[in-house]
Image 1 (tube, helix red, strand yellow):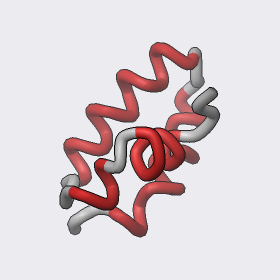
Image 2 (image 1 turned 90 degrees about the vertical axis):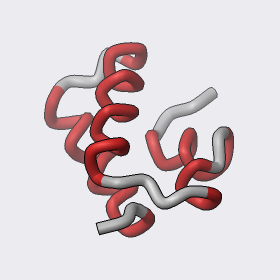
Image 3 (image 1 turned 45 degrees about the vertical axis):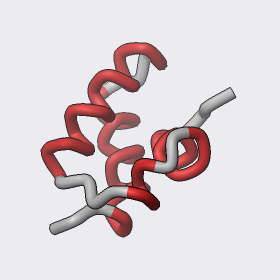
Image 4 (image 1 turned 180 degrees about the vertical axis):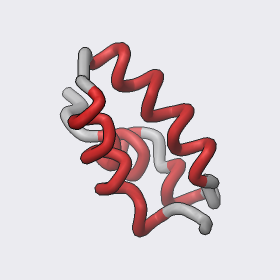
Length: 57
């Protein structure tokens, strides 16, 4: 079961490894995952920060 955004994007759907996601793309994906996982805004922000090292700036 997926518990963190980076787990989903690195291991389950290796998007952080195989592509160069932009900050906007990461935000979009994170918001959709947050809705499915019932994350509040603080949790969503933490999950995005966990993925920050792997995105294109």
